[in-house]
Length: 296
Image 1 (spheres, one colour):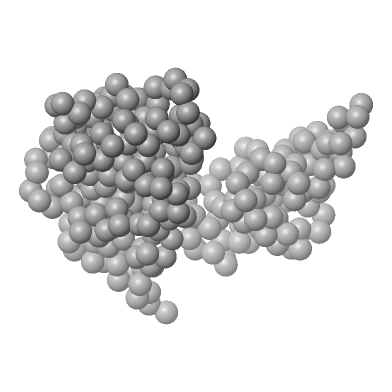
Image 2 (tube, helix red, strand yellow):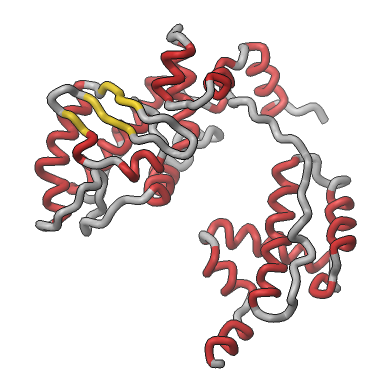
């Protein structure tokens, strides 16, 4: 009973903070406040009421991502009502938007090889993390790995003698073995033999990337680290794991590498996925004009 009372007393803000990251929780809270302002009877609304509200929003917002974000926040609000026992249903659950968003790789937002290598120059507060973060960043900017691939790497996946790294197959990518840069081999050797051992403090762990207390570094940790470390560096372009990987793949194609070779390098299961990175210069210019010089 005590647990039920605690749930019923939970505020919307508490619920959001418990189930989402701070950034997402704050964004959803703002959208829900706006929804409640426009729909004072939202707590008793039914499916057609919510659909009508979304329909009205289409006159104000043309961007599909914006509409989807608002709908996600509204769905979250009704999840909260059901979670706290204020409703037994979620009237927004089956609502889906069919707005199409562009799946083109936005080439104008990507980085040159020189810009990517500059990410290795970041200063570290903690000496032990310098080698670890150099290893992490290197595998992003040279091998274009996904955060989930970095998370699952083990020390046995690194072959310093042959200068290679083996990446296991994932839900969306194939397994592959990639060459390491000579500079990476030196940093990896220093990290594995010294810094990593100091952070583990005699613990036995296979994971390549570990934290200051010897814990496994997760894909979420990696994503947050990159965003936090390089926020504003190349503004308005955003430095994150996705744009880094997209840049690596795009740069390989720009250098004239065969599509099939780049597909294997990236681990793409379909050549069509790699093909998206060959957006023509005309398409790229058009997208840039639309994004940075919109017609009013």
